[in-house]
Image (cartoon, rainbow, N blue to C red; front, side):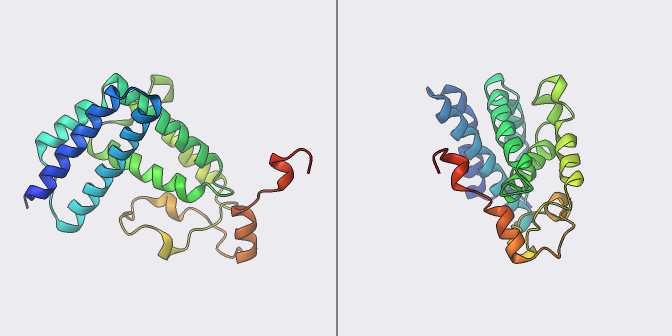
Amino acid sequence: MNTSPAEESFQEYIIHQLKMGPRAAEYSERQESFSNAVDNIVTLWTENRKNKTTWTSDFQGKASKLLRTLENKSAFQIYLSNFDVYAHRSMTDGFYRSCSMRSKIQVIVEEFVDFADLVPEEDADHLEYIDDLYKDFADDIPPIPHDKIPSWVPASHWWWRVPTRHDMSREEIEERLYDYHPEDWNPDY
């Protein structure tokens, strides 16, 4: 099935976002533009799956080319750094956000550009490193209830279901998720 005029317009908007990021004057604007483009790509990808449509090859080609630009690769590196922060906080409050970012990265690499083309050569195995981190700490990660996993997440995105301790009490989960103590940020406490 072909794309609708609305989907084609949304594709053009995403291309605009990927072009705007490198031109933005401020670092935060560039990063925000890139993150929004990634979110919008996943939104369109979700709609395509639901409606059994595909994006145009023109869009896929343009987005792939733009994702490979030096500026967008730089923005991807920052996105990846933020993802790392959440992945390393998976045993506490970072797992949900980490999984969301991991899934978005997976859509980008399956649909547009190989992961190795987005990162320096020494980081080419970074997704495997994070996947291993999830597996290594599966007993310590608070599980996400099935009804809290976004509906757009396909079964192949196994990381959402990696936690093995489904017997964690609500109290234990909340303790892990909200493990902040006043003395952590106030030395006079």
